[in-house]
Image 1: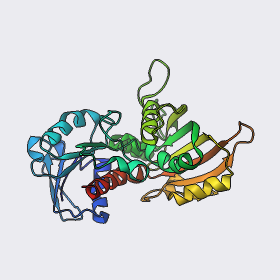
Image 2 (image 1 turned 180 degrees about the vertical axis):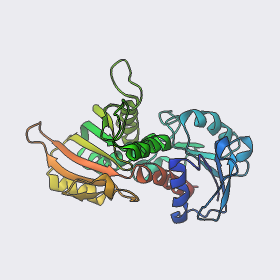
Image 3 (image 1 turned 120 degrees about the vertical axis):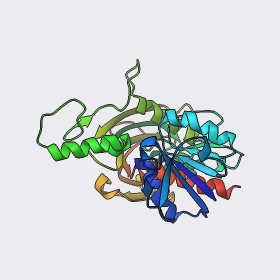
Image 4 (image 1 turned 60 degrees about the vertical axis):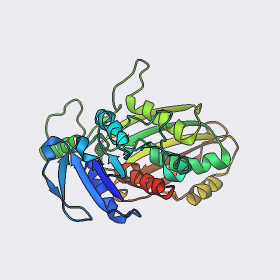
Length: 321
């Protein structure tokens, strides 16, 4: 299989390159591209050192599939070029996620939507992937009536520049505090704020969760925050089911779906490099309302939340060919 990665030197692109060593795909050719400033750089891959080329129309001919680990504006420009050259695009940006004719895929949740001749496949937001993996087994057996969550998202979710900023703040600590500082701080919104007070990240989470779970009218309330953690996203999730279940029943159905459920809430420091979704502190909310449950969900945002899911999409797509 001839594979390209656009944005190969970025934080998710690098993760994806390393994951190819574990892939079920038979990679016969690997092409890597990035911005002009990275052109000509040699990088180590599971298939030997590879040269970084500039992303342009000459990058795509002959490829079977290309991963786009780039911004939405870059995907908007180059994904159609790949499509026009019969290259399947797996896009990690938000550009195509809500398009009606583009499947938004988490393979263990809705992988059956692949194999319909699609040329563009969207990879979800890195907080949405573990969320729907955790909730889909519950939805299938007990139904979902309502969903509320607050996210605690690591700095790596904002990209390499943000991670570099945190490293710089650590190096210079103690220093004068400033607006937008990550170190010793919590930022109570992610992205721009709309006229209703919702952040861009919160709207993404709501829309993508509804699409993947095929619950377009699911009532949701989301608060997304950035915390001073390098890697690993966590979220406090409260959900209301359509029929009552004991916490033990919910735990068993989640474990059957591959989620690691523990009494101790997962911590970001323990999530790095893991392929799994973790859940802890599962409890019934006796003081809230009937059929209300809460839990703490955590996952490696760069791996399970982004690069690994993109790779699993590719494997599932290839299986359906």
